Image (cartoon, rainbow, N blue to C red):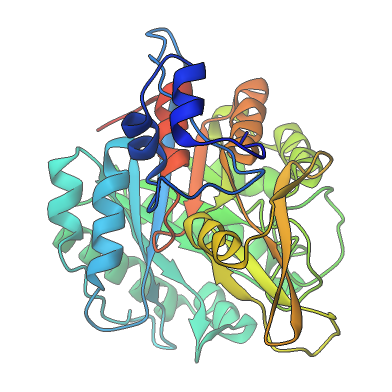
Length: 375
């Protein structure tokens, strides 16, 4: 932890290493400028008997041609990945799928022995649609077309893995969703089927994000699930940690009572948020920032980074143009806390949302604490 008066040279000397190595591991853009409260990862030799886990990275972009920055980030992360999931093919009302440009993703995946997956979702006009999901689940012709299209796209991309991300489903379609997944598993024999699920803390949790999601029934059908354990602090809400360790633990401990632990992936955000204060409902949404961007802001505004021991997350305040801002993000301490929880609960692994955010400390610590399963 950087303290007042520290320099990279003095830290390196104290720990018996060199400044260039620390700067490289942490990808410090300006090694001569550190931030008080900043967490630095020091070089270490990974233990050969560290546990093996699965990892996944969702790759998201909003343009027809994938940005080179996203591809560069995927290339850096690929040595630490089991799966790569370009997000996403949207299911249309007739069961066909929207087109996707994967750019060089298949080449990157093949180079690093990463398995790709087809992701299908009920997003329509930029939002998850319960009526679209109902049609997909209950119209037999549409359902069969989804199965055929998903398998065809998977074959075209050289993968045998289909991932579903259906959200905000009407509670009346709870059993229909399970039946849809069973049908997909039967249709796509020999394929891996996985699903992302809302972060529940009980079977009867109220709310549209939760009520249609049956952890036990879905867990029995699919090969693994990704629990979306993030967004407690979200862009439209009050400032707080995106994935505070307490709520994350509570969700995963409940999930283990319904789903075999070796079928559960912990969801993990690679981003934080920058809120403009004072927060009021209806304010403009907070801006998403990567850990690297958060550090850059702290440096530019010359503010110290604090750490919430309960949430296990870093944060800071700064002023710009007469307005106060509050930033919550991830650092080496917060991700290490999640890795320790992952080990404790003996889960399948960790899934990251999403690829466009720089967080070099994550990938270094991931390799230090785990071995990553490859194809």
